[in-house]
Length: 98
Length: 371
Image (cartoon, rainbow over all chains, first blue to last red):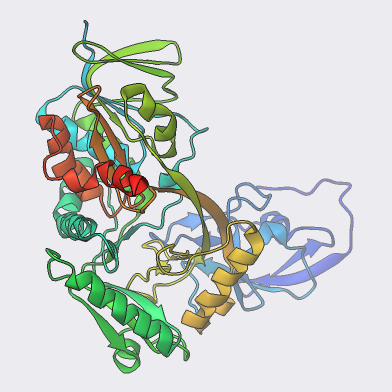
């Protein structure tokens, strides 16, 4: 669905989403890297388990929530991609006290 | 004089919407005037509690009214839900106020006893719960929590959906919700009121002022006085987390959607309104002492609202003597009292006399001021 601009540059960074290896570029937000990697569903909603992906891409809508390196409910659009990130979808609500 | 409506209700927040919803039930022609987004909108900043345990401390009529409304809430919610299809998320498992020291717990015990001992106050089902029992009910309570006061009548709801449902139900009952209608002048005539705002004129047989702090400006137009003060309250909400807390606390509750709301209650804590961040930080610190697992929860938002306080903190319901048919309605517990507002109070206004609500007229304040 998304294609990188041909002039896009930056060092290639490897990370995983739900166990699948993906690659992004240095300077990508995590949300952009996931979208470029073909990921559409980032999380499921709390009340009904419905699928959600990034909407505003500017930190407002909270629809791009993912779990990053074991920390739940992170906004993928607000986090720069880093080498080796372990990302999983945010499935429904976070469990406190785990 | 032409008459557009039997009753005009000014203020479409929880208080006005509940009264208008109740008034529209019996086939009256009712309009509900909403100021628009410039309004202070206390109904958008409330804590969504149906709360009884220490309400009316020092004024038994308020304890009695609160108890009555909380008792009516379940059937009120069923009626609203059946009519509108909106789930109000109402739960009434009883509510707690945690104590973090023996002194606090003793204070809670004394207030519960004093409220219950007031003449005419029905059995509120309130008691002190000591730590061991509390931990069996709420295992997540922190190690500093020594006990709590509990009242079986306490509960909570989803208040944004309550407001939505009241607006929707009012419309379904034939009422007209008129938005962006700041009321500029009200003129009492021979057989009703002329209400002017935003270039439109409305004629109504009766008028109900339920505009919160806006009543300060409106009340004198119909010979009434609304001696109100804003009292700022701040709220925090966390990210949505899986349900862990199945009882509301006076200053902390998990919503039906998973977020944890942290607030502050005037009657229990009091706070300095002059400085925003320290207040929010103190609320968060205390919340972590109540529930240590909240230390890892992210705060998503914090915001403030203005409570609508009468000089003694109790509701004000009064009909104008100078312009009969004009009613003043102010309180700071629009959620708790919604059932009574949609029921008893709407019926009283519909009849044209506030018999049964005499204890809430402004007379008590004028007497106090004269003393």
